[in-house]
Length: 274
Image 1 (cartoon, one colour):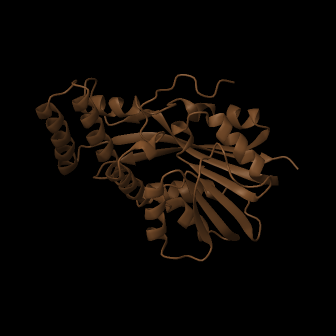
Image 2 (cartoon, one colour):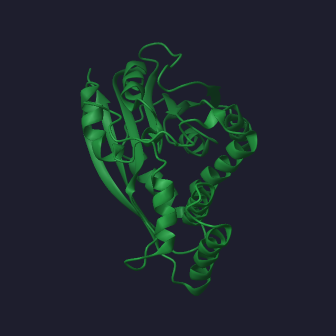
């Protein structure tokens, strides 16, 4: 199966180590904003409840960013130790600052496609909103499979970015901003291929679930509109005034109670055969 069919190459998450420190820090702030959302926290708890964490579980989160999910994993029942892995030293510094010295967490710099861990090292591997941004996602899943012990589980949770919308009419300028950001995602269709992706790597699908996320107030979707407007501005598709108008319109809808953002997510829990 071609794991990267239909991808783009301008995904800022795929090339995050090439971005400025300021840009990486800004992306990190967005991760923390999203992680603080009660709906996001509920989805995290829901799919983690599908995972079998054995007593004293050794857990790896690939693509941990600022460590929000790693922190949640460190408090999860039966989890002994968690390693958060990310390629960005800037995000890892933020993760350590947010972590406030929890004894059972470690943050390491690395690439999920080339894991520096021995075979069978972990009971559980988690990938949270990661794979759609990764060139060669199949290699990432293959490496996760390698470092899982027999009977261990891979938990993948990702956004189905092709469902992302803030439109409230047939022709909505804010949706143009969303579409501009979606167009940068490396593999926007990947979430729909997750069951096949894990099976290709020899894992068995044990649970497949869908989730819906709705936002009507200021939060993550406002950053989507803003970033999309900036992309359209930088590409010459919007003037500075038009980009500002889009940002203002989003804020006016929030103030008026008429803003509506929605996106679907999916989780796959896959087991490594004994």
